[in-house]
Structures are given as C-alpha cells and as structure tokens.
Image 1 (cartoon, rainbow, N blue to C red):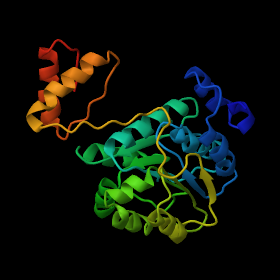
Image 2 (cartoon, rainbow, N blue to C red):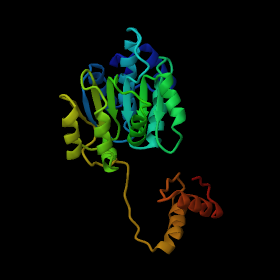
Image 3 (tube, one colour):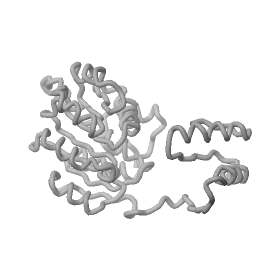
Image 4 (cartoon, one colour):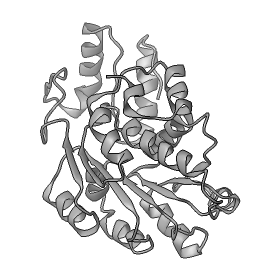
Length: 274
C-alpha cells in the first residue's frame, strides 16, 4: 500500500516523494486513517518505526484542508508535547519537511534557551506548537501562549514523559486546553498502567494500535555486558572497537565525560566526535 492510498493531499505526497518516502510503515498504515477520521489514538510504537510521520501527516492534512474555512485566530490549533528539547527540535524539523508545500506555520519551545524569541514567534502566530512540558508551563505562567483554540493534542513518547516526572505538568497543561471538539493522539513505546490511566482521564474511546509487543526489544539488537573495573573501562572500549570496524555509538553520563572520551579515542588513532 502506498501513501497515495491513504488519502493525503497532493502537496503532502509531493513532500514525501521529495524525501524518498514511498511506502508507509506499519504504524503509519494503522494510525493515519483513524487520525484522518477524527478519532482519538492510543498508539504503541517504538522509536524508529516512523511514528513522527504517523501523527505529523494527518495533523498537517487536517489543518491544510481546514485552511479553506474563515481565518482562524493566530493562536495554535495543535499542540505536540515531547519529553526532551532534542525530540521537540526533531519533530518540528520533520513537520517542516512534510509540510513544506502546505504553508502551515509552526514553532518549537523548550528550555535551555531564551524565552523572548519563542514569545515573538507565538505573537506572530502559528498553527502548530511543538513543546516540552516544563517550558510550556513557563509560557503559560507568563501568559505568552494561548491554548484555548487547540484542536489536536499529541503526546509523543508519553512513557518517557511520565518516567521524567512530567505527569503533574501534563495535567496542568490539560487544564488549559478545550475539552470539546479536541482529538488526542498518544504515542508510547509501552502501555504501562500509568499510560492507560492517563488516557482514560482525557481521551474519548481511543482507537488502540500496538505495533510492537510491550517491552519488546528490536530483533536486530544483541545485548552483552562486560563487568569491568572503572580504571580498565577505556582499555576495554579500545579493545572492543578494534574488534569491530563498524560505526559505533557510545553513551556517556555527562558532557564532560563525552568530550574527554572523544579526546582519548582521537589520541588512539580513531575518528570520533562528541
């Protein structure tokens, strides 16, 4: 089945084609039709399954089609909540790519940067707002954002947001959203009991979609653990890297540690970047 069969606007199909996307992934096949039909969604999908397009495309379609109606206020019509600034920026960039031919305004707000440019973007007016919960709460407190016209709420990686302690912030944000005529799409890697309870509180008869089994691991990943003394960790890392010439992703606990490790790898003759 192709993207054309899902009933998306030609402008969206053109952007997908330009990015080399022809066939939808399973989560896109299952999520886009009920989303376009106006249903709430409770979708279980891991990172890497194409879930960003699964909610971005029907959202862009909904706003693009309704642009033919009388002019809307300059307040956001859709809100996407993500757990981290990195994911917020990634989602926003993806939406800009998918929506490059439909003329829909969007912006992203997250912590760690100044609020003034974000306030300026909100004042100019956007249809789609991508935000992290903490910074959105800041803007609500400053009265620099108006959420009274939100038609679509999307919770991306809801399980991570709960793990990071954002549940009180999410509930506070929900209190500023209209309850009538709003659809909600919740995406989560797992359907933990807390996710189910959250969905029950603010969703109406959601369509449930489960792409991967709960708590499943990607089939291509093999796990190994090497117990090692702290002083020998770097020697072990060099040994493992010497055994395998493929690209390798190494996680470090801190930025300082990542920079220090990169210098060590470069001194050992390896190409590395933090």
